[in-house]
Image (cartoon, rainbow, N blue to C red; front, side, top):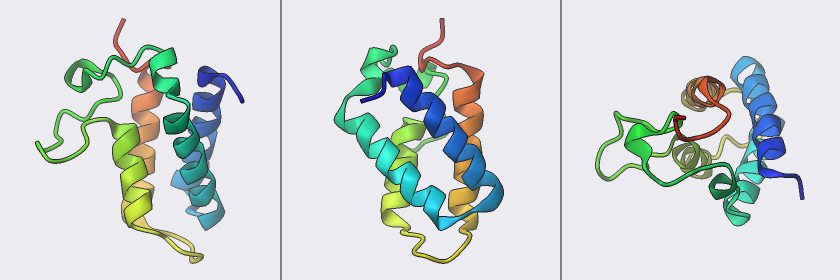
Length: 112
């Protein structure tokens, strides 16, 4: 199993690829990687304290019933929106780009 930061770096690469080319293969890879991130509780290893309002990966615009963590919100989106085998999904592609920007701001979820 790769370390938490290695997994985050791999996720960044695939997010970038999906944001540009919207290939379904990238989506399925992202889904698997995010499930692994969840399964191994890797975010805790790199500093997630579940305080999304002050987290660089949090979404301050999330409504009370939405997931405030951009990573888990993205996983929910791709689980719900199943892009199938066709190319492209504008909503998912836009959210992939937003998540990538949030992760690139800081390689750790909480602000230092």
